[in-house]
Image (cartoon, rainbow, N blue to C red; front, side, top):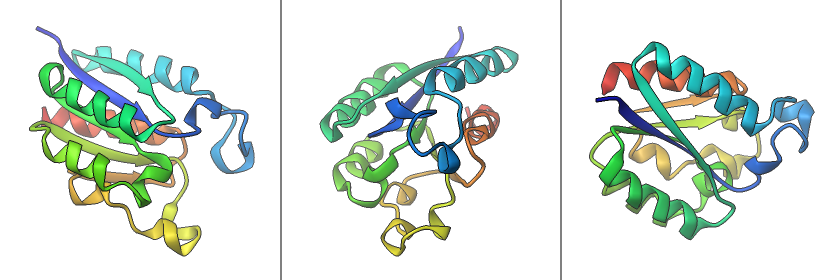
Amino acid sequence: MTKLITVLNGPNLNLLGQREPEKYGSKTLADVEVEVSELALEFGLKVLFQQSNFEGGLVEMIHAARETSAGIIINPAAYSHTSVAVLDALNTFDGAVIEVHISNIHRREEFRHHSFVSARADGVIAGCGTQGYSLALRHIATLV
């Protein structure tokens, strides 16, 4: 049976490749999905990519992953710094969790230096561009 990894993306990541390409690069979320899906096959994994601009949408996706997924890779975007609800939902998930940030949040505005999600994450990858998703998948494959 192929293990499923849910890849969750928070607000504004639907504009990846268009929004501030000097900060986030030119790849779209669809490009990242293709790359990660192909890599997942090498590990005998399958990925489900999802994105929501709404906090409650992410919470519901995490709840659904409790029944279907061995792990979650999450780029909570701005909700990293504001959402106790996303943290609480992740705390209900028994599998591995890897947090991804395309930019290095520690080199940005001070309010971005803290992530609520990091309290639950088994690993955090920041500042590696969209390659961070592939790095996260490689690591989560060792955990599941």
